[in-house]
Image 1 (cartoon, one colour):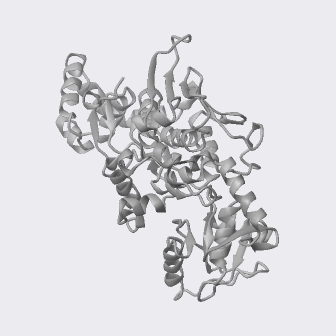
Image 2: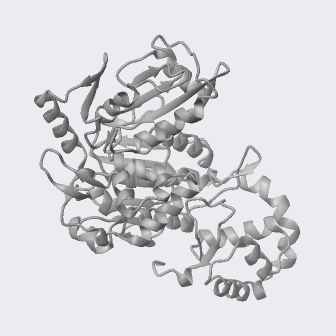
Length: 489
């Protein structure tokens, strides 16, 4: 959270979803009770270094490393908070003083702190352990609200994909080299990610629907949810049917990959500089759309999710458990996690932002991508995102790209050898190659010309695919030919 947003939270004072802890040189003993209460209720903001009256005291710099270490270690310790969770405190400087900020999600499980169950009201944290009615209502609310928590006791570890678990370890280490998931056993990792649960009301124990959707083998997913699929459709010429389609019926991690590849194949990516750094507007817009489709879907509903690219807009729609109806205003909306476990998992692997910030990013980048038009987010039983795609989407491409691309365009791009060179390139890229390797293979010295006239068009046409599609500008990025991709349509 940036400092201006945090200042606003502090000014508004403590309440149902905001708590201050002074923690000048050590952690307050009750901070974990507040974390537990927020998890059990509606989530919230915990600010360390601020007293009860909202005065910014700050945290002693010498004590800061130990406080951060204690927080991360204890919250991931099932003896203290059960089920455990992984939250990384964010350091923020306000008025020259150091604070720690914790964003606590609403959990789809009932959590205990030191064996006790805490709930939250406007007055603070309540120990409801010895109040059977309050505990029962808490369990009922969680179970009725979050289908991702549904336990399948006959699903075994071997029903999940070991290769995906190893891939997730690499992804979290790329985001945070010290992430605890990287060194845990498979069972510890799945428990820490809240994909293996114990239902204290029914006695059931096992892997959840979230575990199956994120990491399950395709046949296991289809056995549990026969209706599960995401339909990616291109509809520009044949408006009655489609011009291209990908019928996606696999885990959520690879569903994300295939949707982003479909987008790269069929949507333009105008040249755009942000703080002197070239970024992909297309990926900034549609990573939010795709993540939203996969994270916040109501999966027990049989409505098939659709991602439709048309002439003037892109429509994404999926089954929803609405908290309201109508168009969402990013300035006034309150974000609700529809599947908190899946949402947290996507955040840890770097494919989603904090709840709420993704919507603001979507609005900001869509306005640039579409030439000023806003996206539409429509809350209802079917959640819809509409992103305008018009000829205005590429205004920056011409003035910024043409001067760099022109000098080499004429001598190197001749019609006689273009087809032959591309065919040879695709054969060369059956094994993943770096940008430098491909450019050298083509005998091109002008990097900008190569990127704009050769590399980007091949990616947009789906002929070259990215090894790290979620991070297109990664220095470790490589490209491989669609000839090797078994999922290519």
